[in-house]
Length: 271
Ligand code: ADP
Ligand code: MG
Image (cartoon, rainbow, N blue to C red; front, side):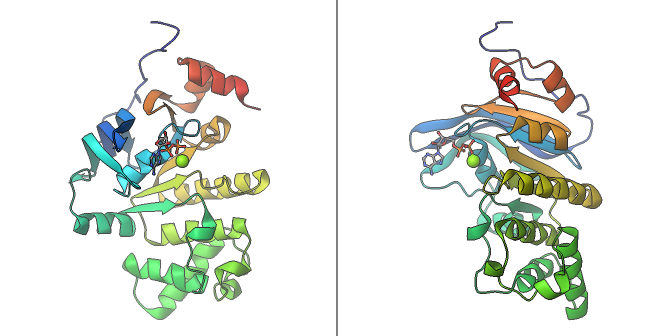
């Protein structure tokens, strides 16, 4: 073992069950520039996994690849992505529309750009519920109010008829969580869902997200640059640096005995 490159990644102890998500030797480039250098990642059903790493380490690129929504000149140059038994890296658009339309739910970083400004929020959640297969106006209306309440929005019955601009940034983020859960995704991905919000609101929303995920038994992939937040709220922490996974393991193990120099620095820098 060397002190400059750190130890080999620690794999989760329980690898018995078929993973929901399986990424193998994934390489991604923007034009000629490779930014993911062969990423391996398994996520088991019901597991809550955090991906931690500084800005530019490739977290969002990895997420975009799972949805096959790489921006600009981004493309997969090698490797495999499986969701259940489906081959995502080579799937056609029909399958990808199904994946994006519900099997993978994404809570995006910036709530301001991801709600339709001219549609009542309840109607947006209702659309997601219909996409998830729910039928019948009263049942949908009831579920809209339930989901908003579960997401921590007070007076949901009244507020369902309001438009996005009538909500604060934190409340809009909660609406997006309700939209994502309405489709009953197999995998819920939150890509730095709270970085646009102040710290108190961030903590509240993360606690809520965790409760919801536990209630629904949803598998969670949670992206953050904050190791403290990740360690509190997940079963496994995956550390990324410059396009590689450099270390992964149970949060307690990572915090107690970090192997990679970068992880040690992250822990030392935590407040
Ligand atoms: P993170 O989400 O961890 O901050 P990103 O996945 O956004 O990191 O970025 C990883 C690398 O890919 C960075 O070097 C970034 O500059 C590059 N990158 C991201 N998006 C694009 C893009 N649209 N065009 C070119 N390069 C990009
Ligand atoms: Mg990012």
